[in-house]
Image (cartoon, rainbow, N blue to C red; front, side):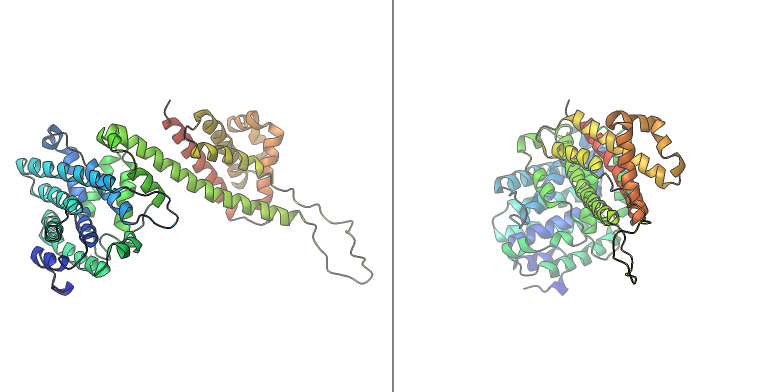
Length: 429
């Protein structure tokens, strides 16, 4: 039995893995290959050799996401499960694609890309194996290929990270692996990521305007893996459950579908935060609306004093709450109505603009703001008097008790409205 402290190369890692469960080997191999994923991803996207063979990074990306989701299923609070057939299909597709990339990279004399592809292929193969010795051998091969892809200097850092990985899962069985929060481990632990310059450059390239496809989700996903800050588990499960036929249709079909799922979950999170803030608005407003109590004085019957100032008007949170809930219903609908989303997002946007104007020191022109283009849009939608009362209500809350929160509310409303409009624009026509 090889001890963790003795692991320094492919043979010693294989010896250690032979005493571990398949789940440990799959996780270890995947982590090793993920460390050099940017090398593989960029090469298959930019290489003419890879392009001629219709190679893409999508099968490997899918396998890594699906494999991690499957490891944690079923889990408390996550209603989705990943069938074995789904993980096997993802692993097989990734293995075939990566193997083809190995041959293509060899032909193009790109050793680092060939090794990165080899790591991806071996990691996928581990998930398909049944024989214990083959599982350990393929997992160790994946790690060794990742080290070679990273180069001599970076390879030493990978072996140190592999040792940390080993200590995290030593002796774990399938149940223990599923119950562990392994996704919260940063990919490089506390070590410096020597592949970071490659990843930063590739992220920039993926975000260029000339990119025909939107890779935003996969960028966010890989960053979350690097940082050990996993994305929403239900969202990842929903993406993993996209059927094989759609995955097989390629990037042009599946990327927009993934992006739609991702946007929905982002909007849900924003709605939840806005609901909390609006509930706080209502609480503060209710408290500020109560008459102030004077200290008892001799002969005072504690009746309402004649000189009491009137309470600040309660904020009209419903004017924000209602469009927010209207958008929420569309986000949760199977077939969302683009016009409903657009109309209510515009309402929230104009309210946020008017709040921001007031807080920006323009109290004297607050009501005059409704004569502006943004004010006219809000007035047309809600009626000038109602719209002014609505924003004045939230501003009253700002004046009463929550100076620091109101600017944040305005900013968050504006950001949410913009994001909702972008989602509406991307909905199928």
